[in-house]
Length: 268
Image (spheres, helix red, strand yellow):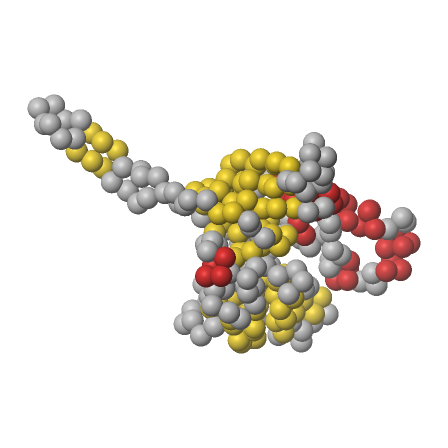
């Protein structure tokens, strides 16, 4: 098994080879380096197809990050069919001084963002007050506090960047704010974008803009909620004919790695 960090796309590329004929699918796991158990299944990598002893490449966009400089992550791959394990320990990852907004269902829309403003973090109480007859003070039923709610401002400097961010937001779904927490002062979290406002910066007719997002924290989605690196629309957008597809991608495993773009997402 190999695990290779890709700094350009902020992801870890996972590959494994040498599987036996009975290994039809495999599952990839991640954990903080040195942790005692494998508790996190890599998103979209619970049933990765194996063909001729080679597993389709999987990607981990949500690798654990300590927030104190370059860190390491352990990876494992497992075949339930034959009970076979393989490992790639202490893979180096690094998002120093970076913040990424990653779309769990559309990973090819992930973008590095550079927040120029982080608002106040709020948590709402979820207690209920019960008024008791003859009792001055109400009785309370208590619960944990809500998830975090935080406004984040993201600047864009070109028209293409502005359109790309707008497209990323328009698909909806759960996003992952993946940040160097100690450097930027913003905590990583899964969230939904409750509101997005775009305002101009600089000249009235300029292309610079700022996106003000209201993020509401949610639980990490199940690992089965995932998207591919590309879609059939990516195939159509990048190839004029089926013969072009056959010429450029010798096998289905090659085609499965086609990289999509924001233009492949159709939002009406």
